[in-house]
Length: 279
Ligand SMILES: [Zn+2]
Image (cartoon, rainbow, N blue to C red; front, side, top):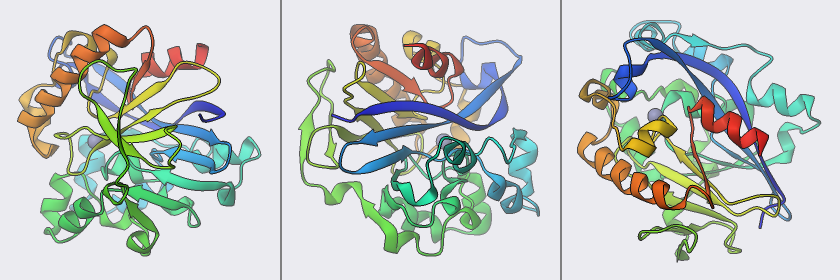
């Protein structure tokens, strides 16, 4: 089991609620970008995703990438990046031994370059497919090459290189994942559809109930509870909207049976992040 889990938010963006949640309203809501900080007794500090950082501003300074920042207005402050918040807590860049990526969308990887010493866990095949696409195709998939460190492949271990695949007894339904450190504490679970190589993370902690970090497999807890997908418009950036809806449906069923015993945390849901911080 890990020693502790907490959640930081590193920047945010604005979205129209109705687009992200079909029962929602035509009003703008804030989507914080969360970063899970996991303390492992032998593996040290592990981050799940990295949130926004100043690198995002540079990567979207020019067209066509600037379109990303125009369509998705962001709020990024150099004092609230993951690296700055960790530093203020006495955690140095070198203390962050592992960064686990749910997927390669810009709002999840923008802080990667701030952690040049960390081992990265990701779906390497997704990276190799995306980097071969044209500049416009990469942008359409919310993938900004400038956010990826030059030594990404050298530092990254593929989830699938871990053959230890285990079932999650705390979750109803058939959920299996890769036991990253061999102690059943940190398990990467494929949650396909939202992006190529999209994974969630199931974490068992000594200090509270297990946490299931969902990345972008669900955007809001209420979407999870009601099995309410985004509008098809939001499907444009996704790898497969059909598969996304299938994953959301499976997650929704599990959430409604298990949310008393397990904390379900969509990356951008402020309600889930606040609730986790209080319990
Ligand atoms: Zn995403």
